[in-house]
Image 1 (tube, rainbow, N blue to C red):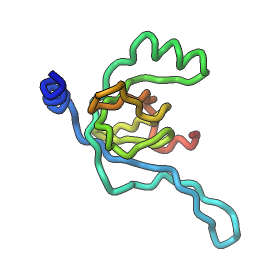
Image 2 (cartoon, rainbow, N blue to C red; image 1 turned 180 degrees about the vertical axis):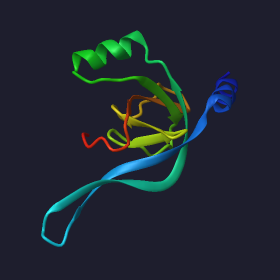
Image 3 (cartoon, one colour; image 1 turned 30 degrees about the vertical axis):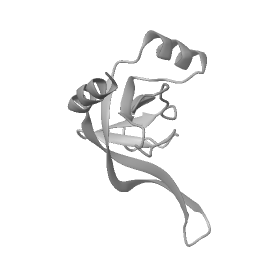
Image 4 (tube, rainbow, N blue to C red; image 1 turned 180 degrees about the horizontal axis):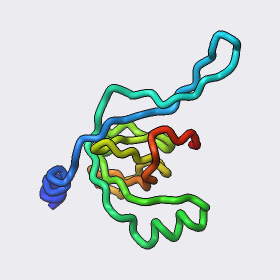
Amino acid sequence: MQCAIGNYAKRLMVSAQVWRKETTTDEGGGQIVDWVDQERTISVELTSPSDTELQVAAQMGVTITHSAMMPLDAEVSYGDRIEVDGEFYQLQSDPLSSTHSAIARATVRKTPFDETTS
């Protein structure tokens, strides 16, 4: 059954570019924070968040717009951004999976690319 679910999930997933916030020092000693293309993609499926996810996010003061399903080895974490079809989504949680699952789930917030908040 797990293989059937995994195969079904793969059909729904699309490719997403990964972006990560990085800080560098400029010539004057100040810091520059910028989003850097990680030059890799992950498979992801964006869905509507569950009522429980919305409730937990509201209690924590976090805005979420979608849930993102991805493989366990996706190598993304809280704060990263993923780009799907020219639109950006920032992870509002680390990807988590249930026991014996090959798919992880994270909450995300649709965001403009140039938004500077974390």
